[in-house]
Image (cartoon, rainbow, N blue to C red; front, side, top):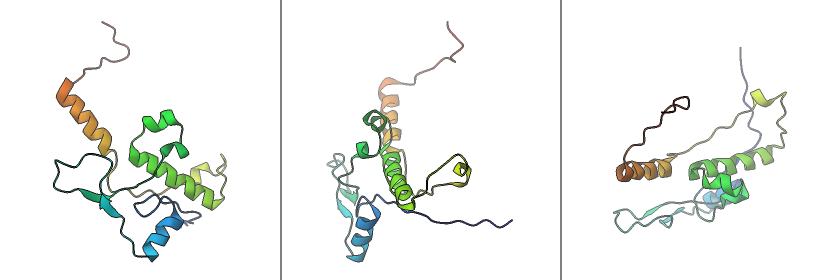
Length: 136
């Protein structure tokens, strides 16, 4: 059985721009997306520059409560996915839902949650959770 893949829309959130046209313009102009890091304090680090996505507001793509509970890489992926879906003009219905997919590229994901929870573990120690059915 031979399967076909059709790219119907693209989305991008990158250090060069928050959508595909801005990214493409940055590439055509040979701009660099590398700049000093602003998302966290780098004074104790040797490296103080990165390809950081600037000016991104996750509440443009999801509810504020959802944004607070979601890793930044997921917020960026949701934004790019929404752009791609809008560009495609495809309406996802139950009839085609199983045939629709999204391909996401991420250098590393969930690192903020990983480091935050590691700090919690080091500072507070492990938390032992009893199964929901066990009530001492």
